[in-house]
Image (cartoon, rainbow, N blue to C red; front, side, top):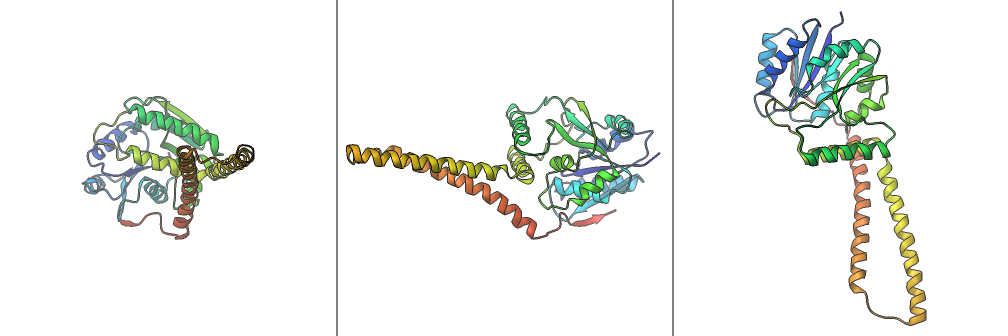
Length: 303
């Protein structure tokens, strides 16, 4: 039987790690497995708990970053550190149920990837669920990849898939898009949302919003086209307005009026210009960061 590597990004998960390991052990009694914890610069006792697990069990490995690099870097590092033919990526909060792994192992014989998706968002704030669904709708309209609504990072992958992901060494990473971009045959398993047992999510609404912008900018240049089309549209409107003003002045004379509407139009058009400049700035910022060739992560300690 082939051994399974389980990659687990961790940020301030001290309360969950012992529970997580026991839950995985209970569900994988007939599967040979290792777990690779990636400590993403946690500021609680996450690293100490990982060390305890590593000292207690032979199948525990870990990487600890020099600081918080973010979940995307932790995912890449864990996949890079894995060595087995099959690799599972999952969170430590048990919102990714380990009970699905045996079923995933059955499907992996026929597919390259076995992914999971939530069919409900029970327990999430309404506003967060609304914007999450809106993101998937917009992203699928303007990108050439299909992002599956409710898809989790929780997935089982063959080694060739992992190697393909590791070949994409971009600094600005959006794993959900990368998983889809590399292709391969995927089987989706559906399950209802599971709430965290302990602790709080490190993903605030603002962090999720920035992450969604990252995803759109990483996989499409459509916003640049939108800015261009918007500019052309308002240029045409402005040209027609000039013609109307000239004709009106020639026919009826010049009148000094309409200052409130003029100021409103100026402010509106200025907003459009700043919006377009912001879109361009996002892409320039990504180019700037990529050009530095900085490492995706830095390891301080590993075992």
